[in-house]
Image (cartoon, rainbow, N blue to C red):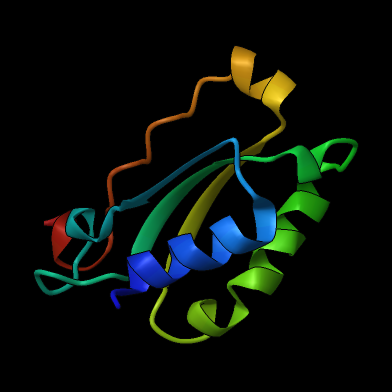
Length: 103
């Protein structure tokens, strides 16, 4: 199972998402082709209702702790309730300027 599939499975099991989009953005960074190290997560869940952004992030970090300690280098998180999602727009990720991407 790929890292992306493992992440998706863990998130689905824990958050019963209304919407989940997990995008592998590794190709935008100075990593080998086929890498699974940089991700963007858009997650909409009723479990986020009443929670501040920091607490939402902490919940996701806890669920993905093993992967974040190893193969996953970066995870941009955009976490919403159903109500917030209706009005939300997810920002584009910035272009990587590190390593060979800066030249």
